[in-house]
Image 1 (cartoon, rainbow, N blue to C red):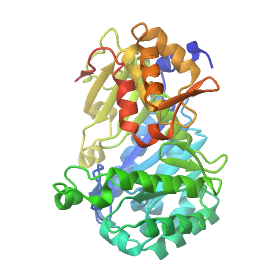
Image 2: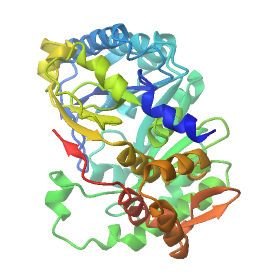
Image 3: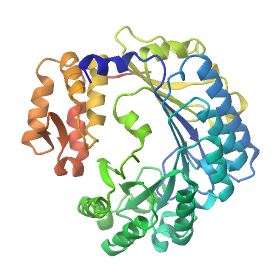
Image 4: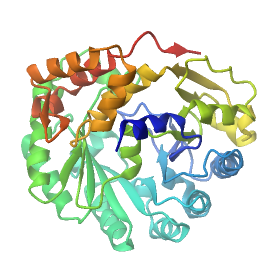
Length: 417
């Protein structure tokens, strides 16, 4: 790939990826700060909201924002809360765009055989299941509705359906030990899933865990415990042919999540639904302006626009027109976009693509990128091997320092509206 090809990502008028946000859950988990709300399964808002997303897909396609979309991801919240009918229609609407990969998030308690069938029949290729732990006491503390037995049963059913299957697992939890974490990893490996995302628990502001533990020094969630559990996961998973390709993601061959890779490699994406985020080129933003006339004009030096829909779920269900959406907006210059791509690219095992390095050198202040990279090598965060800068073990474990130093290359302040 050439420098010119990386720069061309800043001029793709349509989205490469589509994200659809479903904000409903059966119960709010103790650690969750996502845009989701506990909702009764038969609340009529659920079906109206799903229909609204289908309408927005159609309108975005008519604007030319989805003509070249390659991946789609239905996340939440809990998309399987939609039930087979509404979820099937939403999956079909996304699949109808001609995407090569279509993922849908699920929780074990709502991933019925009927829902699995609707995913497959609608054109989904992948399901990501929120397992989190295979220890019943840990699941109870997290506020999950399923137990380990149900999680294993539904993962096996998903594997049998023919979908590519990913599971989420969490470490550094209250009551978790090295022994229970090792058991969760062993039991996961026996299920046959081809992908797993592994995260240390983060105690987020405003969550139930924040109220319980926010003012405490939690030994069970210390940096040392988090690092040790992540290292345990790496050793166990890579020993079974699930290789780490991103700081928190492991996959068997041909099972990587292409949608998430798009996020980390500067591809423009459109997010639909309450609190959904989008990253558009200037050309894509101009297309959105054709219908969303309330949006401000982009400054002359804009290369990338980040948007987050602020409309509530009731508002979107009542009026799904794109012109009715309100957004928080960030306008990025070419240099700021390059710094962002460097920061996100450093999450990948393959490291920073040479064409990104060439592009960044051309748009960042002279000498600044090479000085930063040399410093990161000297401090042990990255290495230069086979023509690519990639994270070291220290870089994996102290990612915030690595990412922060790359983002600090961004010239000036991002304009927020």
